[in-house]
Length: 501
Image 1: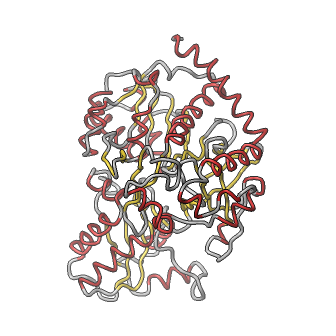
Image 2: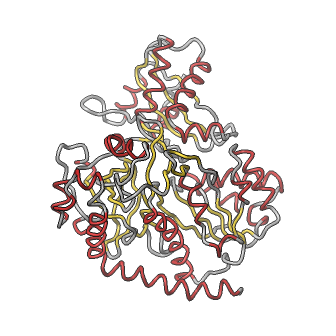
């Protein structure tokens, strides 16, 4: 055992004790977080607009601060930040903007403050320390660790460093991990994803890799290239590899293929980072769920999903949540987000401690590869192309094709029932794909980075949707086929029933 591994056990035990304090005092900690962040922001534009000086309780807060998503938050607050104004949502100016995919806007800019930045790092650290404390496994500490992520090169927006969250976080990796960390800064800055993965393979193939972290489809691409180059399973390339850390997408669709590529089971740690804050992390290999990040400058609120679109939905704090109920999660943060709906839904599977699973999105979506494609985006892309081509669409649904039988890159598979079909379906598909890339920056990155190939359209027989809905007992009424699914249940039914042309 190396000296770093030896001391990591003691450090882990000390740090994990903090988690025990969270478990015992979660509600009190959350109350204190709300009081603290409201007090700190009372003299900002937002604080004055919403009478923060009159807020003494959570009930006061709810009366004065409405729920907003990004589009509703943009004016005047985000626009003022992007115009280099100070003291808008949080004292001073943001430390960073994270650039992320939006809904109708295409790109949104989420502020990160000096106070919030440290929590992004601390939560990831606590996930690893919890693992060490519970399992006693420190073997990964002395080996090399790879973090597959976006470029750490940052742009400027209103004089503020701006980039993807993973690229920003790369600038704050603790010094004690830097010597173990791969790939190199130069390789991380390569924009083309396929070229970048090739370079990562060359840098790591002869190293003692012990921890690998990243979004599952990106990691799978890395594994495929390693196997292609060596003809070996990952465990034979990296005999000491024993810990996989992931987040961003549902792991289950990738699990079987990843384990097959590795050639052995390895321990995994799930994390729930977001541009708006590091929300939760897996703290146990024994008990399920993700530990809610209670003491991290975030005050959490929850709205029952079935009430989310009501004019006055029920809005509760942590002390009133129920188990196994879907909630939209609402954030109030020390980066200046207030009553902010991030669009995710969660379920509590434990209240002692407070542990969640990420159950989905407020609206139907596809994020099998981290792209967060939503209904407005696919509808815009398809309807715009159809209008240009004078094509009429009866109905459609979209699903991810993660493991194509024909091999090659994964893709989005669109099942469309046309009133009048395009004369050149392939050309029409490429037009829709190009429009979707313009609407969704993550999808654009995945296509241009050769992680996904352009979408594939399957033309359906007449009345295919009617037949499908009838078979499901959902024909008529207010029942609708989801335009987007993050699985292949509907897609597979169309194929099984011979409804494609």
